[in-house]
Image 1 (tube, rainbow, N blue to C red):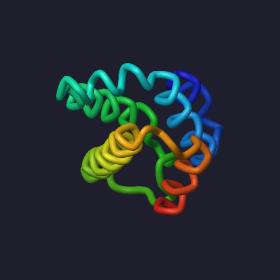
Image 2 (cartoon, rainbow, N blue to C red):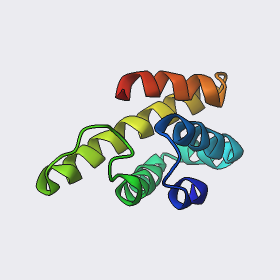
Image 3 (cartoon, one colour):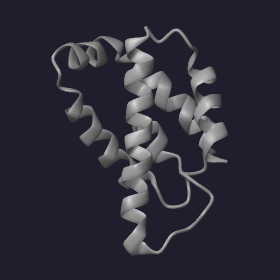
Image 4 (cartoon, one colour):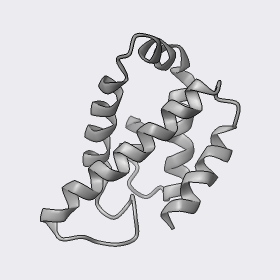
Amino acid sequence: MNQILSNKELHNYENLCLYFAYFREHKKLINNLINSNLTNLLLERCSEFFHSLFSGMVCNKSYPREIEKYVIEYIAGGYYKVLIEWAKNGMKESDNEMAKIIYSLIV
């Protein structure tokens, strides 16, 4: 995740690949959170991550500051739910396949 935050020049698709690669590397942790009904901790972390990242990188549209926080929460929730579903299904799709799915929704 730090790689995404440190390189603001990466494009959305590349960031998505890194996002899924990161969680694939931490598959055991994700599965333990799911099995323990503690995925809300992951949602909180995703939300913090997207607040750090946002600024025009998550989508091409700019929003007024008072609306931006809601947009970030909306996006974080979607990424979180996709991540959990992907993990529950055994992460069968590659990181690139998952990035393509999400990228097609945000462009």
